[in-house]
Image (cartoon, rainbow, N blue to C red):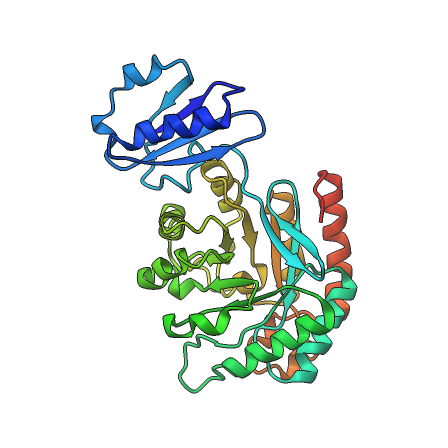
Length: 340
């Protein structure tokens, strides 16, 4: 249930009203917008008398949220969520009128590789550095990443360039090693790893949640709900392609997910065209399409020498290919009035 308060309601009256509602056995989430305050009621709301609630002098309107995801829903939180991440003495923002570019290699391979790529993508205008330290691979014989050594190399690259880092967490036992990672990525295979999501809900750290290989938008939002229910409101949704009958590309990028998610939810939406198509030559077109569709950012794989990459070289752009794409994406964002 969502209760919209009248404009100008003082914060102290809002808190007092929320306490009265909580005495009726529900949890109240207060969302303070620019012009209006929204109270989201979570729990068994069947005992709350809607007529009496509407009669309260502070209340403008009462709505019931039909979607199974409550905290992730747009009615629960009408204004877009904005996530602020400290970076090089400043703050980088994702969502709510901004456009962010995340770039870097699929996996961290060596100090020279990750630092060089970090320097080049920053020069081209990237806002965040991505890099895998722990890699989920279909084959047990494929390169699985450098593990904690890879995280240390990412932190070194962050120190060298000032770029905040994004890296994938696979195992709940590795959580403490990610304390200094700015955005924790939860991959498609772990989207419904509920024990992991519950634990991350307690961590209050930005989470980039990737859509599962064959998951619906509702399933993605319900996975986000696990994180939000734990109290972590710094959630990014990521469309990275889904499995369909088409085998020309690695996956099928579902661009309709971008406006769909933004209509249903207040959470920022990031698109990963590299994993969606698995083809470097196709990635720029899909990245531009994602920006045009309203995505809050893109995540692009960039490797200094894709031919020798130990992971996903076929879908990685070179720094020389990434630079003009980043420039075009900046222009797209500027045309729509979005900042970076």
